[in-house]
Length: 577
Image (cartoon, rainbow, N blue to C red; front, side, top):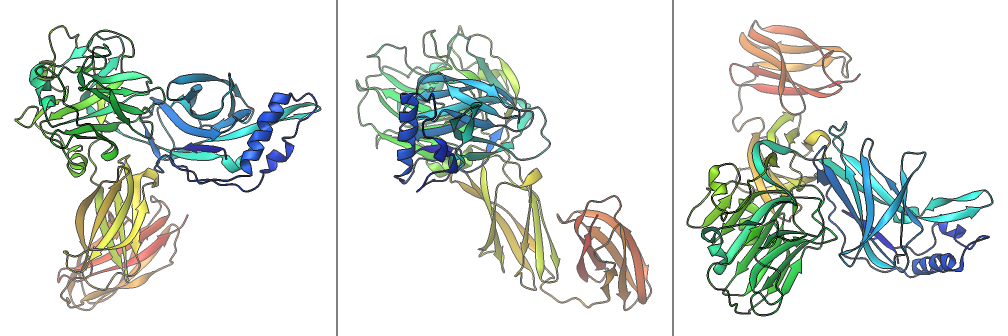
């Protein structure tokens, strides 16, 4: 059956005709070829099958103001008449093309519609599997944290007055887009495709002679280009590795040291305009080579052949060893070459943290200092640097909690684009944790909140297990929340507030049982202090204080009472506007 898949599509099966297909019979003037195309498309619908090879479900990260590639895949006996494409507001469409067999490109003609969407048609007849690449430019600023794009195949229905494209809604894909951050305080290497080969010196590349791990950060929308290469283009010449972006945006690895070119590659495209981490790890004794993208192993290669390389292997950045076509266009950062074959867990951890520029175990090119320039052979052109490195801080920020009448409200911020989900874990002793809930990585404004409805009435501990789209994960901090292990004598208490909910103000009542210093404060749902209403010594008796919410947004807030004796109590209040 036909399949339209993109980053995050689930398998789709269909056992009948969409409403639009009832109009797919030949109309007056419909050619026999067009009719056969629609008939074969309709027949394919009658035989559903299980679909595989889908892209990841996480929102696609992008850098505001930069070019972005949106990828989808079509698998059908015949292509539909057109696709209907919808983009977020203010996104600029630059081109649409199909790619067959990873390198044959077919451009699409693009026509705008009155509704602000586009219908795009292939300029040549397509059959079988092909990728659709939509190249767009994101706006500099976005009003929302998340946006989406969608694409749906359509068939042309002829009428007496002309005709129109009718979408096949059963196959629509709708994918989320999430703005990512770049670190403007550090530099990356910018390549524009016109530079001379940037050949690395042998002191850097000698680590390729045995077991090694080459890792780096990459950001590009270029297709059919060379990222790293030790080859000069001669068919029988031996080389340790070549990494390219193929015509469909996927990463490919090649090697030839035993007379035969061997290869492996990524299943999903990575030339989407976002930062990706790439690693190649070769273990010489076992003859296994593994390819990693964003910390996840995407392919493996068993190559026991013994090579004939003389001396340290050659390696160039952005092209082959000799000037030629297919030069890389895009950004590179934090290139590391290790003398050992690193395992997946080591790569997942180390990719987020800087390392010294040169040690006995690793050589590093980070383009921050003059030392990076010294790693190239004479004749290399001046390095073109730009600001905007990948954000490598993955730890959630402002992890906090508030206890209120048997519930505990947790809050934190995270803007890391490769986070798949957060698992919230709880412990009674701070040692043994169990899962109490999970949140997918799709929060607006990068703000996450979680309510533990079954929290015990004592001190408890929470931590976050942050899982990435690469299948890696990390533990993010431990937070202690609760009433305390020892009972403190109650010398003051909150009685409530009226009205509740309120707009814009409410009166908070509390009672002091003996002369005592009392603090009354208001916190937001994140646990941040927003106002101190009272902070003084009180005589015993009934007291009231007013809270004005005029300057605050609607939502849940907490009133907290604290005494100098150590007693603390909170109550929930609700502001509605």
